[in-house]
Length: 360
Image (cartoon, rainbow, N blue to C red; front, side, top):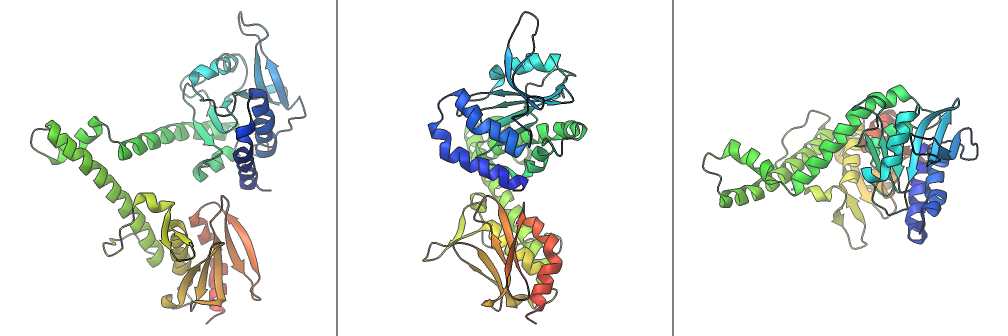
């Protein structure tokens, strides 16, 4: 299995078994060890590579143990502290990590409850673990944007310098995204005042603030809609984004929800439509654009020529955690290729054009 498949396999295991896990030890056995072994690729059965119950006396603290230390050349690379599945993770839970980080060569530490993994380093002060993580991974809600960064921590790809260099940007970008998410959904008073003071010349009374609270949320929603529409239009035309006022309104919550439904409960998502427009933008170089159509089914999203199932260009398998694009050979045999994002479709442009040309 590739890296994404291993992540998804562990995610499925957590979904199936988390309710039956009642202790920290069970959490480590069921979820944390498979994460270290299967996902990160370290041998949990080799104590010279993964040392459980790692002891490092600190001052008056004697015999205190950290759950796991990942080693390389007899030096600690990563420290891992575990809690029971479902327990919240905060700085108070990381006291041992703080102490051990200071007295070992480790530059990476992980606090986890088996589902959520928080990764720390020493960006704020040398050899002192930061209070805020530079990377956070929830295995039940995997963010595809951070998968390449998580992959850097695997045994086969471990590159400490690259990890540390990227950590600063990851840390602050993730924090800014959380703030933006909060402010766009439940704007704070200062956030509303910031915009109101730039467009309203009157006194910001309580009534005016309440009005601008609604207006700020509405403006944020419409701005997100405009960005989504422009990206779709850009994919269709293959040019820079332009205004698409004639397009139907798309709400931001629709980005992962159903946009269309037929009598068979087949759901077409915005991501599938974006994929269709990308394929159409690619293949219109060899076919007239009106001939390129799509049909959705419960198991895949098909892109066809002349709305004919016997003239497939490709299939998009997006109704699963690992996305695939299905490509066809001259005998119409399908081969699935994993992709991380919709934009990865562009890497198959030559194959898609060659397939489309078969129907000219």
